Image (tube, rainbow, N blue to C red):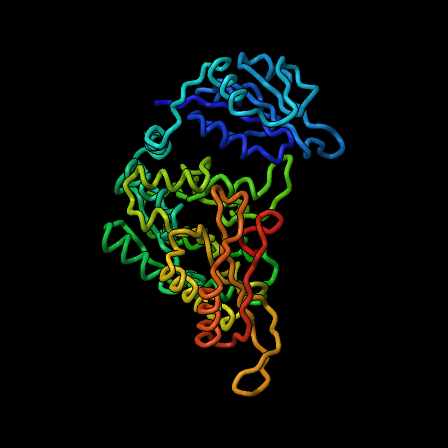
Length: 430
């Protein structure tokens, strides 16, 4: 069943995602598109019922206000404008509409049906995947995280054994992560899984590289090269499946908003990519991805697993990666996860992890002066990863975690707790 859609045209608002989520909460699908989309581009989208021009503080680009093409007003769709007084439409609002105003526009003016739900989404994506892939094969980067796991389930539903999963251990995984991926996906779910240990290859490429964006792009580019090598060993691989989700795309930059950071599956892809991409989750927020996983019948421990970035511990070992700091991140993260699970915080806190900066501080160990690294603990709660608040962990729990890290992790003499919300901070440090 094709789902009706309300299209949001990005006219410089910082609240496009808020508006999109408000529309989806009413049971109607919504997508955000650039302000300069053509009438033909709109008509190629399925089941468009109405358009919202969403202006805001980023409306001025290169000294001029962004405008939609005049032809958009003649496409036959109802149009309203927010914070955009020059718009050629009858309804102009100064701020995001209330639920009642939004509902009246969507259901009374646009005549949209509230048919946005995960059952319909899965059915649509299965059909779209089959149309795109046909009888060919898809190579999927399977990290074992929520996004790639849900993509795997969708692809298995759509094309079955035409899917080949590849898990790359880049040496930047959490403790026992790769072993668990192999156990679950190969031994329990019987997926067609290829395991590649590329630890030395990745760490060699990253040696001496301190700039976060360069690290991300090296990791992303090297991932693609590994997949290309594995694909050459197989017959008929034409597609690359990816767990790209909507926040990845937004944070990698739009025509009216600057990049927050590039994601390895968005900004880090090489120009000579040999595959056509299959990205069925590209318009979903994180909580919607989890809901999709539930609809597909994935086990709860997989669906509600906390997020883990594509570059892995590479963006938590801050600056140029060294093996001693990488091991400190891995071991301290394992302690944090173990203690959060004991305290029941693993079911309460959306994401929690440790980072190790690339500088040392003075301390005392065994009655002698030492100069070692610090571990920073971060624990946040969020719905869609676009904003985040800090988890206020009980002092006794923090004290136990701190003592274990200081006692059990080499080269560490200090533990700190990050109190910064998003914004102004991002969830990850790099």
